[in-house]
Picture (cartoon, rainbow, N blue to C red):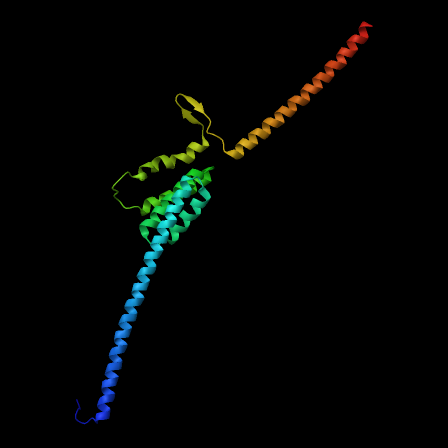
Length: 201
């Protein structure tokens, strides 16, 4: 097809330019679609990887490997792609911190993680609601500082391992002091016995 005022050579060039423009549009659309598909695949792979790491964290928690569980839960609570998975990791992090808390400060840190998880939780749940434990958990720091009342009697809360070591060390010192006093008394007793024998002779 030859347009008026155009030479056949110009018509060919115009058709070539239109064809090149169409090919560029098609290539860009295909490239954009491919790029979008690659991004979607990357998000799916990251979510699958995050899901695997969440399972690993729960497995570590159940095996009482709290250091590993803490690291995995903390990482996922900040960097997981899926919001629900970040919330689950935050719940796990709060649980690890609650289990490991050995001082009122550590308990407050654990309760802070619990509060953040609670704020991020949806308002309705379809199964048991762990948020019902919140009032109990909020009372724990105060309970750690006071003796605990157990069925009509007062019991001290169980001591932490560092407190046990201090208690053992104190008891060892007391035992050594008592042994020293006993040796001194035995020495005095011997001297008295010798003096008594001397008086008899």
